[in-house]
Length: 343
Ligand SMILES: C[S@@+](CC[C@H](N)C(=O)[O-])C[C@H]1O[C@@H](n2cnc3c(N)ncnc32)[C@H](O)[C@@H]1O
Image (cartoon, rainbow, N blue to C red; front, side, top):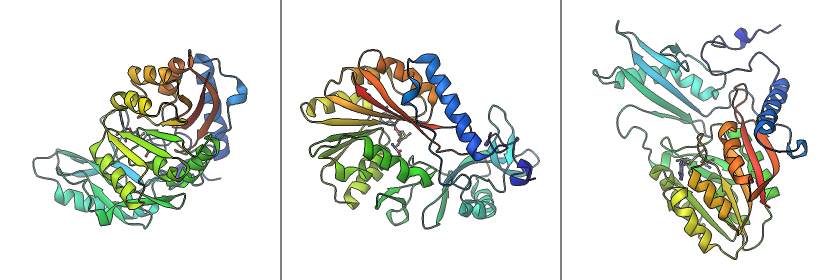
């Protein structure tokens, strides 16, 4: 019988995978059960709203990005690998079972290049390595502008037949294999009308807004990272999407004005905040946004999701469906899409 250590010698030591020792089907069931109990402890959600966890088409070698630490030890030795969560220990990594194979093939060269580039007075550096759909690998992390890329090198992934460009210095979903599934599911659930205003909030480079742009009369994206806004604008230009607008800054700042402008039009929102979830003022704005009838909340943290849903569902919103998507197979992490409708 195959042991998990045969699959990956780092299992149990690097802190990355928690579910490598059980079949993938079992992992999906466990993740679904955990999510349900978290919801039930905090919210009056009935069993019928939960869908089974949507599996990832790729359950191994799906990560298009790795974050690694390069460290110089007192004895002069250079180590490259993962910091074990909650410790000062660095686990040397020569291959990761979750990383795309092109990244694994590149790791020896990455170490060599990063060691050569590390200034003498640096003891530690955080490295980012990514691979695009054409298999090209780029890395950065040493030097101020090391994550900058030239336009001709931008990574892209095709979703709904449309290339979405991103870069080393922007957020982008690490598991590309599941993106088509989630975008199609959102598309099928949105009650599109010709004049629908689609709000892609915490938009990053515009994955959802760009992929679904043809379905809406108008798209407004709000994103605070300047690097991501630059790529979002590149995506809009590349696809000649004149009805897509990007606002740089915080959702908390721009959303009240955007909602005022959309008053009277059919309006659908998608929020995809970082792990910490929504600011209290964003929850308040969404509660009071009377013209917004349909809201999709995509979250990589079930804990902050449940906290925010408590605020959203007290008076204004009802949970219509909970749709978990396994963006991070073999790990304890789970992405959850919640569809809310106004009460
Ligand atoms: C989880 S990512 C989602 C990005 C995008 N939806 C995607 O799937 O590629 C969250 C994004 O929110 C941005 N962000 C974080 N806090 C924000 C805020 N208060 N207002 C606007 N954007 C924010 C981050 O820069 C990041 O790009």
